Amino acid sequence: MQTFKLRDEWTSLETERALVAAVTQDPALYWELLDSLPAGVFAFDETGGAWALLTEAIEAERKPAAPEWAPASDPQAAALRLADLLQRRLLAEAMETMASELHSERPATELLTGAEEAIARAQAAIRATQAGKLTWAAELIGPILQDAEERRRQREETGQPVMGLLTGIAGLDAMINGLNQGLYILGGAPGMGKTTLALQMAAAVARRGTPVVYVTFENSPANLATKAIAGRAGINPQDVARGWADVKALRKAAEEWRPAAERLALIEGTDRLTVAQIRALALRAMNRAKAELCLIVVDYLQMMGKAGAEFRSLATVRERVEVLGAALRELSTRLGSPVLALASQNRAQGNYGGGKGAAALDSLKESGDLEYSADVILFLTQDEKRPTTPPARAIDLTIAKNRHGDTGKVPLIFRPDLSNFGEVDWRHGQ
Image (cartoon, rainbow, N blue to C red; front, side, top):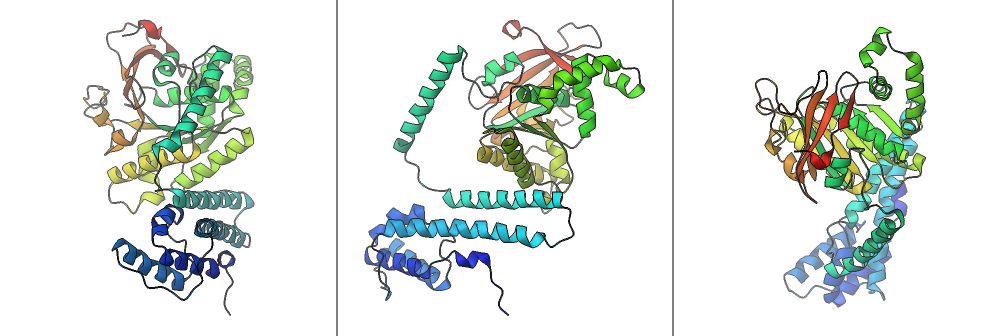
């Protein structure tokens, strides 16, 4: 017995034939409609084959053979309808996948995540049907001016320059204009405080109402939450583990941290976690917070690249990290949100194993072309010249690459015992 597929409902042989006939009759239409007809738009072999022959003839400047079909009276409307039907077929496939899973033995919570991932794949596929089109610069003028007017209005109302998501590090926000759409890399050697700084920045973003999805491959969610609460209380997390902590102070700090915690989702990374799943989880967080964007943190890049099952077909770790970096940048574009990925440095320049602690773009471990795909690259390095009283450490946060602005340094004070960073007056920093 033939199996019915939901996607088969979203086709129109009549419209496909009419469009092919119209372009055959007037080949000049081909160039006008090309942007509206993504790959896969023809659902039938008959019309798909005819369109391929038609395309070949027109591009070779030959007269195409005329099929015995009635041409569309409105070819542009026919092309748009076929593109819409393709998108509906993609959605239908996602719905069929979700429906089939309902009969499995998997827990409902896993099914929900799978459903969100299926929808995310469908959205990505639909977006792909809209990609690759010519965008004339003149078409961008209106949106650019409208955005400029909105930004000026916000500045006049608030008295503050319009920024992206504020990290809580004033010097950094001033130099990079906050966290905007794009891939941000935070590099550094072990012990430089990458996780501490990322968690502190995540809390600052969440505290202002924007949801954060923090994917951790090194620390458990409970460990990260403990560090955040202890840092706010000014207590060493080790004292919490050993039973020496002032519980009253911890409770007070926890209540102060709760507004940020309500918008900070901590996810323990596994080899089964995919970029598509992260996107689905981010969409869930945005929906819960009724927000138009979010911050995604990956802690850290090399570990996800090595562990991820979706990258195992690639021969080397270097390739995996390169592909992951590109996927995270695409994720940022599709969500219109910043992605912050932590990264380790190689031993030669990472201030360990005899390294010199350089903030060089090529120092990112297994980076490949990562330094080219990232929009902003930051490094944490120790400043041996700036005096501090142990256990405090003088750390420089170096903006080594900034696609949209200046580079430079922001001097910080790192308290590893209290899991927090303090800022030196950045206007007088080196």
